[in-house]
Image 1 (cartoon, rainbow, N blue to C red):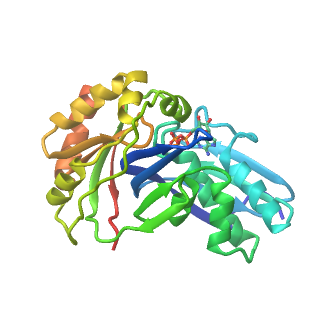
Image 2: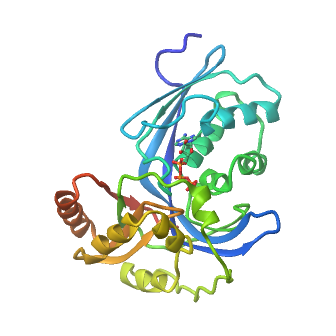
Amino acid sequence: MPDGGEPVVVEAARAKLNLDLLVTARRPDGRHELDSLVLFCDLADRVELRPAEGLTLTVEGPTAEGVPNDGGNLVLRAARALAEAAGVAPRAAIRLVKEIPVAAGLGGGSSDAAATLRGLRRLWGLAIDDERLRDIGLSLGADLPVCLYGRPARMRGIGERLDPVRGLPDLPLLLVNPGRPLATGPVFRALSGPFRAAARPPLSPGPSLVRFAVWLAESRNDLEPPARRLEPEIGRVLEELNALSGCLLARMSGSGATCFGIFGDRGELETAALLLRRKHPHWWIRPTFARGGH
Ligand code: ATP
């Protein structure tokens, strides 16, 4: 079948947001154990899959610059890992449309890889269950299991322990990136202990946005201090978010540099985006929405 034409399978790869991120331990092998509340935004990359003779990848879209389109791309690594696990030939023409900023703490690569695993399972008609898919995902990265799950979750261990989180409010969010990529490895290396277990107070069900923000403010992102040392512009972004009218809480996501502000409603969110864009035309600024757990 030719590579062109309508895609047969299309998957959204949503941006992952760490509402908090506690680094609870460093393992003897150097890996870190985390405890993080994760949810997913409307902002998403798009993975299109078509049958083909071989395996190819094209990368397009507003944030495609700097994304590898060779074996370094997690999408191709995911396709090969799935084909190998299933004992089939890796045959697909993949088109990736990037909307999520790269090396930004929004898990773009992991979410693309998870969308590829889900989509190719359908395209290739594989009898691989979710648990097996999660194991294949975990071999590619710590964020893969939660990206495969795709709904609000508490993620623990090195990403392999997931518990669904239900009853969070829908969140109007302003995502802001100062336009400087920040690699994850150096942020973890700049992190010094002591590492503490998470102590989140219980959250009573069905909280309002304001109550949820007050509850979340008690928690933290342990990667924020080392990331701010490596990229001082993060401090500026947080200051600007906190100064915006209607911002209930501002924090960094993942290993940065993207920060988010939670707003009281969509109107306040749109106004805040306009004001901040005027002041910082070179920052990447995106109002979005994240669905709480229903
Ligand atoms: P995480 O929070 O999971 O560490 P991130 O959001 O900080 O991820 P990504 O956007 O996933 O970072 O990109 C990290 C690096 O991965 C990039 O610098 C890029 O070279 C590489 N990469 C591989 N595949 C992809 C992909 N599909 N999209 C973006 N980057 C990719």
